[in-house]
Image 1 (cartoon, rainbow, N blue to C red):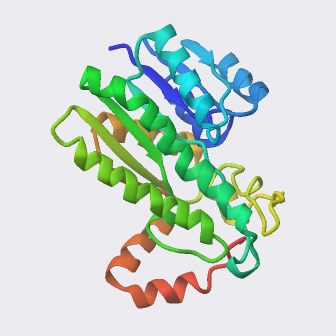
Image 2 (image 1 turned 135 degrees about the vertical axis):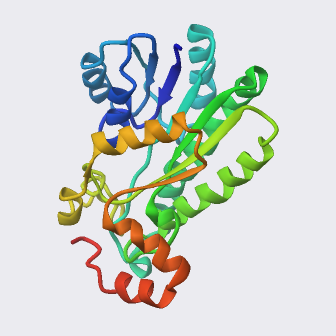
Length: 259
């Protein structure tokens, strides 16, 4: 069955891998992000119907206009993947407030604004999947991730509430919590003054491939899961935090945040 899938942050990393996972001839892919050249490069490698819609998710007016363009052109969106995001590598005591605001604008409000703009068409069709790429840091705090973890915690609060409000509809909300995935998100993470970190963390280099992560996300969507944890042994930290909090704090306080 054909699907229209809209992916934000589609120019690289998990977003790119999700686009490739949905590369089936019956699908239509909508790729959004800020860097047009990255999106076009991804589109060139896709065989199905693919359309590039540049979008800065911190611009609410641009979101409203782009949603109108997408619906006018394609009639509907079946799956929305809120993947646009940025990370952080800085101590809370040293991080400027404007850095935190930028992280919240991208990671939290970007997903909220785009989802709200598309929600009327989901409700009108009484169908659809809203996928939110959170993080394991959406389930617990971690050194040098204060604002990042806060933005991901916020996603859980908002989208769990939304999912409960939609419980009598055929619209599903899936929260995805990846751990260490081999992407360059740490390279583009913000430091205390808003500059980019500029290097990929060693542990991330050894993380799960973006392609394997995307395949697991696609399966979770098909099974209409509500929440999924993706990664290797780092996923255990969720259960340590839940059942053995002392052990969680012992381990978390000793892991090198840039390791």
